[in-house]
Image (cartoon, rainbow, N blue to C red):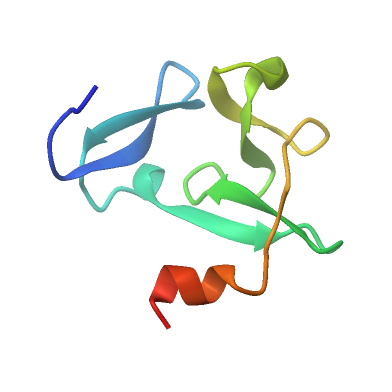
Length: 88
């Protein structure tokens, strides 16, 4: 479903833990970081919620939410990914 241009991933719901697409703004809830776990893997965290909640799927399903570190997913960075993202 295309929601239109100028949308960014934001946080909604009463707990501000549910990722949703909203009109782009400079709100901290629309700012995300990719940070290392320290073991060669990485996680995605929201600037507003801080470094103790991470983007993950709920119980491995299709629902996405912010969860604590013990349940968060991780991903590996590959050497060629940076070149692909920057076009270099």
